[in-house]
Image 1 (cartoon, rainbow, N blue to C red):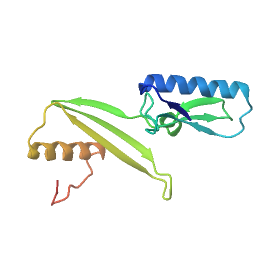
Image 2: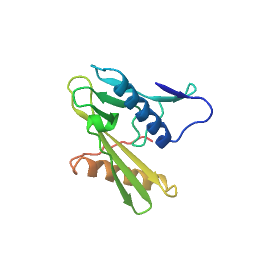
Image 3: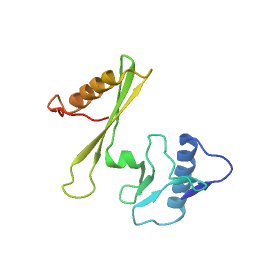
Image 4: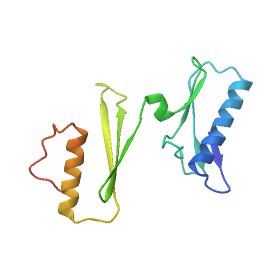
Length: 141
């Protein structure tokens, strides 16, 4: 763990320092186990790295240092739409039944009316599910 005290680092700074620390540790010591490393600002953390991951992971079998998202094979997709953008990401479930769960972030350029928000969100969820999603009859916001 690396803790910053003077000022909160950017994601790029945090990941750069963390990578250098891990590389120094690996070149100085024999590490036979998978190691996770993260950064903090005072009591705030773990800080997000460049791709949004909270950790770097060292794999002694391959000698690779990867972000947590790279290790898990997570690759968010981004799309721009008329008046908003969408980020879709699938993550693995760590406990049985070991499937996946999806996260959809919708960011509006200007706040639309509630009815338009519901229509857009319903469309994006249906698109993410390949159109096979049956929306609920009653939707509470």
